[in-house]
Image (cartoon, rainbow, N blue to C red):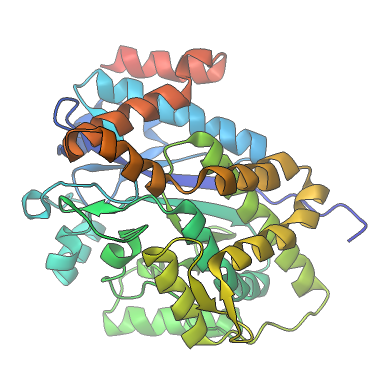
Length: 390
Protein backbone atom coordinates (compact mmCIF):
# COMPACT_ATOMS: atom_id res chain seq x y z
CA UNK A 1 0.00 0.00 0.00
CA UNK A 2 3.03 2.26 -0.30
CA UNK A 3 2.24 3.45 -3.83
CA UNK A 4 -0.60 5.83 -4.50
CA UNK A 5 -3.62 4.00 -5.93
CA UNK A 6 -5.28 5.01 -9.16
CA UNK A 7 -8.08 7.44 -8.38
CA UNK A 8 -11.33 5.99 -9.73
CA UNK A 9 -13.93 8.20 -11.32
CA UNK A 10 -17.11 9.04 -9.45
CA UNK A 11 -20.75 9.65 -10.28
CA UNK A 12 -23.60 10.57 -7.96
CA UNK A 13 -27.34 10.09 -8.41
CA UNK A 14 -29.85 11.87 -6.19
CA UNK A 15 -33.63 11.38 -6.13
CA UNK A 16 -35.52 14.55 -5.15
CA UNK A 17 -39.01 15.03 -3.77
CA UNK A 18 -41.11 17.52 -5.75
CA UNK A 19 -43.25 19.33 -3.18
CA UNK A 20 -45.88 21.99 -2.72
CA UNK A 21 -44.06 24.85 -0.92
CA UNK A 22 -47.03 25.56 1.36
CA UNK A 23 -48.15 22.06 2.34
CA UNK A 24 -44.99 20.03 1.79
CA UNK A 25 -47.01 17.38 -0.02
CA UNK A 26 -45.75 15.76 -3.21
CA UNK A 27 -46.80 17.32 -6.51
CA UNK A 28 -46.66 15.67 -9.99
CA UNK A 29 -44.31 18.25 -11.51
CA UNK A 30 -41.55 16.23 -13.15
CA UNK A 31 -42.84 16.70 -16.72
CA UNK A 32 -43.03 20.46 -16.21
CA UNK A 33 -39.52 20.72 -14.81
CA UNK A 34 -37.92 18.51 -17.43
CA UNK A 35 -39.63 20.45 -20.22
CA UNK A 36 -38.46 23.77 -18.75
CA UNK A 37 -34.86 22.79 -18.03
CA UNK A 38 -32.23 24.25 -20.37
CA UNK A 39 -30.32 21.74 -22.48
CA UNK A 40 -27.18 21.62 -20.33
CA UNK A 41 -29.18 21.03 -17.17
CA UNK A 42 -31.69 18.68 -18.86
CA UNK A 43 -28.88 16.25 -19.75
CA UNK A 44 -28.30 15.73 -16.02
CA UNK A 45 -31.95 15.19 -15.09
CA UNK A 46 -34.27 12.27 -15.63
CA UNK A 47 -37.43 10.46 -14.72
CA UNK A 48 -37.88 8.07 -11.88
CA UNK A 49 -40.89 5.80 -11.42
CA UNK A 50 -43.40 8.44 -10.23
CA UNK A 51 -44.39 11.91 -11.41
CA UNK A 52 -43.40 13.37 -8.03
CA UNK A 53 -39.70 12.41 -8.24
CA UNK A 54 -36.83 14.04 -10.12
CA UNK A 55 -33.57 12.17 -10.62
CA UNK A 56 -30.33 14.12 -10.91
CA UNK A 57 -27.12 12.55 -12.23
CA UNK A 58 -23.77 14.28 -12.04
CA UNK A 59 -21.32 14.10 -14.92
CA UNK A 60 -18.37 11.77 -14.37
CA UNK A 61 -16.07 13.35 -11.78
CA UNK A 62 -12.32 12.85 -11.51
CA UNK A 63 -12.17 13.11 -7.72
CA UNK A 64 -14.19 13.75 -4.58
CA UNK A 65 -13.89 17.54 -4.72
CA UNK A 66 -15.22 17.65 -8.27
CA UNK A 67 -18.02 15.22 -7.42
CA UNK A 68 -19.09 17.24 -4.37
CA UNK A 69 -19.03 20.48 -6.33
CA UNK A 70 -21.13 18.95 -9.09
CA UNK A 71 -23.72 17.67 -6.60
CA UNK A 72 -24.00 21.10 -5.03
CA UNK A 73 -24.25 22.98 -8.32
CA UNK A 74 -26.83 20.56 -9.63
CA UNK A 75 -28.90 20.77 -6.44
CA UNK A 76 -28.87 24.56 -6.61
CA UNK A 77 -29.84 24.60 -10.28
CA UNK A 78 -32.72 22.20 -9.57
CA UNK A 79 -33.99 24.27 -6.65
CA UNK A 80 -33.93 27.47 -8.71
CA UNK A 81 -35.70 25.78 -11.63
CA UNK A 82 -38.30 24.23 -9.31
CA UNK A 83 -38.98 27.45 -7.44
CA UNK A 84 -39.61 29.30 -10.70
CA UNK A 85 -42.42 26.80 -11.30
CA UNK A 86 -43.95 26.89 -7.83
CA UNK A 87 -42.25 23.71 -6.60
CA UNK A 88 -40.04 23.15 -3.56
CA UNK A 89 -37.43 20.44 -3.19
CA UNK A 90 -37.69 17.96 -0.34
CA UNK A 91 -35.00 15.54 0.78
CA UNK A 92 -35.24 12.34 2.81
CA UNK A 93 -35.29 8.60 2.37
CA UNK A 94 -39.09 8.65 2.02
CA UNK A 95 -41.75 11.33 1.99
CA UNK A 96 -43.18 11.52 5.53
CA UNK A 97 -46.90 11.78 4.83
CA UNK A 98 -47.82 11.76 1.11
CA UNK A 99 -50.68 9.50 0.03
CA UNK A 100 -49.34 6.74 -2.22
CA UNK A 101 -52.81 6.13 -3.65
CA UNK A 102 -52.77 9.36 -5.67
CA UNK A 103 -49.35 8.79 -7.24
CA UNK A 104 -49.03 8.18 -10.97
CA UNK A 105 -46.37 6.43 -13.02
CA UNK A 106 -44.36 8.35 -15.58
CA UNK A 107 -45.00 7.48 -19.22
CA UNK A 108 -41.61 6.11 -20.23
CA UNK A 109 -41.82 2.49 -21.48
CA UNK A 110 -39.41 1.17 -18.87
CA UNK A 111 -41.24 2.65 -15.90
CA UNK A 112 -44.64 1.77 -17.35
CA UNK A 113 -43.41 -1.84 -17.43
CA UNK A 114 -42.28 -1.63 -13.80
CA UNK A 115 -45.62 -0.14 -12.76
CA UNK A 116 -47.55 -2.86 -14.58
CA UNK A 117 -45.40 -5.60 -13.09
CA UNK A 118 -45.40 -4.40 -9.50
CA UNK A 119 -48.70 -2.50 -9.17
CA UNK A 120 -49.31 -1.72 -5.46
CA UNK A 121 -45.71 -2.01 -4.31
CA UNK A 122 -44.56 0.28 -7.14
CA UNK A 123 -47.22 2.93 -6.53
CA UNK A 124 -46.40 2.90 -2.80
CA UNK A 125 -42.69 3.40 -3.47
CA UNK A 126 -42.33 6.93 -2.15
CA UNK A 127 -38.62 6.34 -1.54
CA UNK A 128 -35.64 8.50 -2.45
CA UNK A 129 -32.09 7.22 -2.59
CA UNK A 130 -28.53 8.45 -2.91
CA UNK A 131 -26.50 6.26 -5.27
CA UNK A 132 -22.72 6.44 -5.68
CA UNK A 133 -20.90 5.09 -8.74
CA UNK A 134 -17.20 4.31 -8.38
CA UNK A 135 -15.20 3.46 -11.48
CA UNK A 136 -13.88 -0.12 -11.79
CA UNK A 137 -12.73 -0.99 -15.30
CA UNK A 138 -12.18 -4.75 -15.03
CA UNK A 139 -15.43 -6.72 -15.11
CA UNK A 140 -14.27 -9.51 -12.79
CA UNK A 141 -12.92 -6.89 -10.39
CA UNK A 142 -16.38 -5.31 -10.39
CA UNK A 143 -17.86 -8.61 -9.26
CA UNK A 144 -15.25 -9.09 -6.53
CA UNK A 145 -15.82 -5.56 -5.21
CA UNK A 146 -19.62 -5.89 -5.29
CA UNK A 147 -19.44 -9.21 -3.44
CA UNK A 148 -17.18 -7.78 -0.74
CA UNK A 149 -19.13 -4.54 -0.29
CA UNK A 150 -22.03 -6.56 1.11
CA UNK A 151 -20.03 -6.53 4.34
CA UNK A 152 -20.44 -2.78 4.70
CA UNK A 153 -24.07 -2.28 3.61
CA UNK A 154 -25.51 -2.30 7.14
CA UNK A 155 -23.18 0.27 8.71
CA UNK A 156 -23.44 2.55 5.67
CA UNK A 157 -27.23 2.41 5.82
CA UNK A 158 -27.19 3.01 9.58
CA UNK A 159 -25.03 6.10 9.13
CA UNK A 160 -27.26 7.48 6.36
CA UNK A 161 -30.62 6.70 8.06
CA UNK A 162 -33.00 9.54 7.21
CA UNK A 163 -36.55 8.24 6.90
CA UNK A 164 -38.30 7.72 10.25
CA UNK A 165 -41.76 8.91 9.14
CA UNK A 166 -43.97 7.37 6.48
CA UNK A 167 -47.68 7.54 5.65
CA UNK A 168 -48.15 10.12 8.40
CA UNK A 169 -46.76 8.09 11.31
CA UNK A 170 -43.52 7.54 13.15
CA UNK A 171 -42.56 4.08 11.93
CA UNK A 172 -40.27 3.34 14.88
CA UNK A 173 -37.52 2.74 12.29
CA UNK A 174 -34.41 4.84 11.75
CA UNK A 175 -34.95 4.34 8.03
CA UNK A 176 -38.11 2.85 6.54
CA UNK A 177 -36.92 3.39 2.97
CA UNK A 178 -35.40 -0.03 2.41
CA UNK A 179 -38.53 -1.69 3.80
CA UNK A 180 -40.66 0.27 1.32
CA UNK A 181 -38.32 -0.23 -1.63
CA UNK A 182 -37.40 -3.71 -0.41
CA UNK A 183 -40.87 -4.96 -1.31
CA UNK A 184 -39.63 -4.87 -4.92
CA UNK A 185 -38.11 -8.08 -6.30
CA UNK A 186 -34.32 -8.19 -6.81
CA UNK A 187 -33.59 -5.81 -3.93
CA UNK A 188 -31.54 -6.24 -0.76
CA UNK A 189 -28.41 -8.34 -0.94
CA UNK A 190 -27.33 -9.77 -4.27
CA UNK A 191 -26.24 -13.39 -4.30
CA UNK A 192 -22.51 -13.98 -4.45
CA UNK A 193 -21.37 -14.20 -8.06
CA UNK A 194 -18.29 -16.23 -9.04
CA UNK A 195 -17.24 -13.89 -11.85
CA UNK A 196 -18.57 -11.63 -14.58
CA UNK A 197 -19.70 -14.50 -16.79
CA UNK A 198 -21.77 -15.93 -13.92
CA UNK A 199 -23.34 -12.52 -13.38
CA UNK A 200 -24.04 -12.18 -17.10
CA UNK A 201 -25.72 -15.60 -17.22
CA UNK A 202 -28.02 -14.67 -14.34
CA UNK A 203 -29.01 -11.34 -15.90
CA UNK A 204 -29.54 -13.03 -19.28
CA UNK A 205 -31.72 -15.70 -17.67
CA UNK A 206 -33.85 -13.09 -15.90
CA UNK A 207 -34.25 -11.24 -19.19
CA UNK A 208 -35.28 -14.36 -21.14
CA UNK A 209 -37.81 -15.30 -18.47
CA UNK A 210 -39.44 -11.86 -18.53
CA UNK A 211 -38.31 -11.08 -14.98
CA UNK A 212 -36.55 -7.96 -16.25
CA UNK A 213 -36.32 -6.10 -19.55
CA UNK A 214 -32.96 -4.38 -18.96
CA UNK A 215 -30.07 -5.07 -16.55
CA UNK A 216 -30.78 -1.97 -14.47
CA UNK A 217 -33.94 -3.66 -13.18
CA UNK A 218 -31.82 -5.62 -10.74
CA UNK A 219 -31.97 -3.27 -7.77
CA UNK A 220 -29.60 -4.86 -5.26
CA UNK A 221 -27.87 -2.85 -2.51
CA UNK A 222 -24.65 -3.02 -4.51
CA UNK A 223 -24.70 -3.47 -8.28
CA UNK A 224 -21.89 -4.26 -10.67
CA UNK A 225 -23.01 -2.03 -13.49
CA UNK A 226 -23.40 -3.39 -17.01
CA UNK A 227 -23.82 -0.06 -18.81
CA UNK A 228 -21.01 1.85 -17.11
CA UNK A 229 -17.63 0.55 -15.84
CA UNK A 230 -18.66 1.18 -12.24
CA UNK A 231 -19.76 -0.42 -9.02
CA UNK A 232 -22.90 1.30 -7.73
CA UNK A 233 -23.67 1.62 -4.01
CA UNK A 234 -27.45 1.96 -3.73
CA UNK A 235 -28.23 1.53 -0.02
CA UNK A 236 -27.93 5.15 1.12
CA UNK A 237 -30.83 7.41 2.13
CA UNK A 238 -30.88 10.88 0.59
CA UNK A 239 -29.08 13.40 2.80
CA UNK A 240 -30.23 16.90 3.67
CA UNK A 241 -26.71 18.13 4.41
CA UNK A 242 -24.33 18.18 1.47
CA UNK A 243 -21.35 17.61 3.77
CA UNK A 244 -22.85 14.21 4.55
CA UNK A 245 -23.33 13.43 0.88
CA UNK A 246 -19.68 14.28 0.31
CA UNK A 247 -18.71 11.94 3.14
CA UNK A 248 -20.64 9.00 1.72
CA UNK A 249 -19.10 9.54 -1.71
CA UNK A 250 -15.61 9.62 -0.17
CA UNK A 251 -16.27 6.51 1.95
CA UNK A 252 -17.56 4.66 -1.11
CA UNK A 253 -14.52 5.59 -3.17
CA UNK A 254 -12.02 4.57 -0.49
CA UNK A 255 -13.76 1.25 0.12
CA UNK A 256 -13.70 0.43 -3.58
CA UNK A 257 -10.05 1.42 -3.97
CA UNK A 258 -9.09 -0.87 -1.11
CA UNK A 259 -11.09 -3.76 -2.51
CA UNK A 260 -9.65 -3.37 -6.01
CA UNK A 261 -6.18 -3.52 -4.46
CA UNK A 262 -7.20 -6.71 -2.63
CA UNK A 263 -8.46 -8.22 -5.88
CA UNK A 264 -5.27 -7.30 -7.70
CA UNK A 265 -3.18 -8.97 -4.98
CA UNK A 266 -5.28 -12.14 -5.15
CA UNK A 267 -6.84 -11.92 -1.69
CA UNK A 268 -9.69 -14.43 -1.32
CA UNK A 269 -13.21 -13.18 -0.73
CA UNK A 270 -14.67 -13.12 2.74
CA UNK A 271 -17.02 -15.92 3.74
CA UNK A 272 -20.02 -13.72 4.46
CA UNK A 273 -22.87 -15.53 6.20
CA UNK A 274 -26.21 -14.50 4.60
CA UNK A 275 -28.13 -14.87 7.88
CA UNK A 276 -25.68 -12.54 9.64
CA UNK A 277 -25.84 -10.02 6.80
CA UNK A 278 -29.63 -10.04 7.06
CA UNK A 279 -29.47 -9.53 10.83
CA UNK A 280 -27.35 -6.42 10.48
CA UNK A 281 -29.39 -5.15 7.57
CA UNK A 282 -32.67 -5.23 9.48
CA UNK A 283 -31.17 -3.72 12.62
CA UNK A 284 -29.57 -0.91 10.63
CA UNK A 285 -33.10 0.03 9.57
CA UNK A 286 -34.88 -0.48 12.87
CA UNK A 287 -32.55 0.45 15.73
CA UNK A 288 -29.91 2.97 16.70
CA UNK A 289 -26.18 2.30 16.62
CA UNK A 290 -26.13 0.55 20.00
CA UNK A 291 -28.09 -2.40 18.59
CA UNK A 292 -26.32 -5.75 18.85
CA UNK A 293 -25.82 -7.72 15.64
CA UNK A 294 -24.13 -10.91 14.52
CA UNK A 295 -20.75 -10.08 12.99
CA UNK A 296 -21.09 -10.83 9.24
CA UNK A 297 -17.95 -13.00 9.22
CA UNK A 298 -17.71 -14.63 12.64
CA UNK A 299 -21.22 -14.45 14.06
CA UNK A 300 -19.92 -13.04 17.35
CA UNK A 301 -22.11 -10.42 19.00
CA UNK A 302 -21.02 -6.87 18.27
CA UNK A 303 -22.82 -3.56 18.07
CA UNK A 304 -23.63 -1.60 14.95
CA UNK A 305 -21.28 1.06 16.30
CA UNK A 306 -18.50 -1.54 16.39
CA UNK A 307 -19.09 -2.18 12.67
CA UNK A 308 -19.12 1.57 11.97
CA UNK A 309 -15.75 1.84 13.72
CA UNK A 310 -14.47 -1.13 11.71
CA UNK A 311 -15.64 0.63 8.54
CA UNK A 312 -13.76 3.76 9.58
CA UNK A 313 -10.51 1.88 10.21
CA UNK A 314 -10.85 -0.03 6.94
CA UNK A 315 -11.29 3.20 5.02
CA UNK A 316 -8.63 5.22 6.84
CA UNK A 317 -5.44 4.07 5.01
CA UNK A 318 -7.07 4.25 1.58
CA UNK A 319 -8.50 7.69 2.25
CA UNK A 320 -5.03 8.80 3.32
CA UNK A 321 -3.52 7.56 0.04
CA UNK A 322 -6.31 9.22 -1.96
CA UNK A 323 -5.96 12.48 -0.03
CA UNK A 324 -9.61 12.33 1.08
CA UNK A 325 -9.18 11.90 4.84
CA UNK A 326 -11.07 15.08 5.67
CA UNK A 327 -14.07 14.10 3.54
CA UNK A 328 -14.13 10.42 4.50
CA UNK A 329 -12.80 10.20 8.07
CA UNK A 330 -13.48 13.76 9.20
CA UNK A 331 -16.98 13.59 7.75
CA UNK A 332 -17.64 10.24 9.39
CA UNK A 333 -16.51 11.60 12.75
CA UNK A 334 -18.94 14.49 12.38
CA UNK A 335 -21.79 12.09 11.66
CA UNK A 336 -20.79 10.05 14.72
CA UNK A 337 -20.88 13.21 16.81
CA UNK A 338 -24.19 14.55 15.48
CA UNK A 339 -26.06 11.31 14.79
CA UNK A 340 -27.96 10.30 11.66
CA UNK A 341 -30.39 12.74 10.11
CA UNK A 342 -33.37 10.69 11.30
CA UNK A 343 -32.47 11.88 14.82
CA UNK A 344 -32.64 15.48 13.62
CA UNK A 345 -36.04 14.83 12.02
CA UNK A 346 -37.48 13.41 15.25
CA UNK A 347 -36.07 16.26 17.34
CA UNK A 348 -37.40 18.82 14.88
CA UNK A 349 -40.87 17.26 14.88
CA UNK A 350 -40.98 17.70 18.64
CA UNK A 351 -40.73 21.45 18.02
CA UNK A 352 -43.10 21.48 15.04
CA UNK A 353 -46.90 21.43 14.92
CA UNK A 354 -47.13 18.43 12.61
CA UNK A 355 -45.38 16.57 9.81
CA UNK A 356 -46.31 19.22 7.27
CA UNK A 357 -44.39 21.80 9.29
CA UNK A 358 -41.49 19.37 9.62
CA UNK A 359 -41.45 18.97 5.84
CA UNK A 360 -41.39 22.73 5.37
CA UNK A 361 -38.44 22.92 7.77
CA UNK A 362 -36.67 20.19 5.80
CA UNK A 363 -37.22 22.06 2.53
CA UNK A 364 -35.90 25.27 4.07
CA UNK A 365 -32.85 23.49 5.44
CA UNK A 366 -32.12 21.90 2.05
CA UNK A 367 -32.06 25.37 0.49
CA UNK A 368 -30.08 26.93 3.35
CA UNK A 369 -27.36 24.28 3.58
CA UNK A 370 -26.73 24.22 -0.18
CA UNK A 371 -25.37 27.80 0.15
CA UNK A 372 -26.26 28.49 -3.45
CA UNK A 373 -25.44 32.18 -3.10
CA UNK A 374 -21.75 31.23 -2.75
CA UNK A 375 -21.60 29.59 -6.15
CA UNK A 376 -19.61 31.23 -8.93
CA UNK A 377 -18.37 30.45 -12.40
CA UNK A 378 -19.91 27.61 -14.34
CA UNK A 379 -22.28 26.55 -11.56
CA UNK A 380 -23.78 30.03 -11.41
CA UNK A 381 -24.18 30.05 -15.21
CA UNK A 382 -26.18 26.82 -15.02
CA UNK A 383 -28.45 28.43 -12.42
CA UNK A 384 -28.98 31.51 -14.60
CA UNK A 385 -29.81 29.28 -17.57
CA UNK A 386 -32.43 27.50 -15.47
CA UNK A 387 -34.04 30.79 -14.50
CA UNK A 388 -34.08 32.07 -18.10
CA UNK A 389 -35.64 28.81 -19.31
CA UNK A 390 -38.67 29.44 -17.16
